[in-house]
Image (cartoon, rainbow, N blue to C red):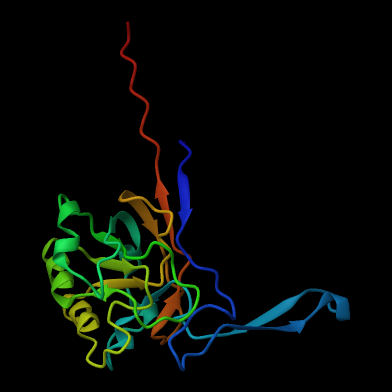
Length: 219
């Protein structure tokens, strides 16, 4: 088997991870410690499932829609294209993606930042709803972005999320694409099977396989 390069595109999940105001931050507590006489160290975690890299479930933006344990895992695993739209402004438009339109795979991740934010900043780039429609028309099943949301921070209508709902698309948010070149990869970003949850953390990675060595013809 050929070796392949693995790129971790997940931010560190900690108490300092940026979150939407009012959301539950990451909190880790120890319920047993070896130093106190226990046989093991045992921790408990309290956090919103939207901390760090995560997959939203349709339930997050529509009552009665599917929770994260009911989504099809196949959408989170397979061929993927990373497209750069650095400096695109408040919204990723179709014009920012056209240069990479040819033969789009079913998964598209958009890099908008030179460096992922390490503290909360509401002035992040989101998707224009029409851009998601355009991607869906080209067979894209999953979209991702390196900011906290596919909708602007101040949005109450969540138009981009509702395009995802209507088009039955999946989404990854809070990715770290700082060191990822444009191009095609294999995405692995499986959500946890959290019963009834509106989202799940993911450990998102990209794999890039080396080109196959040319086959030597027999003499």
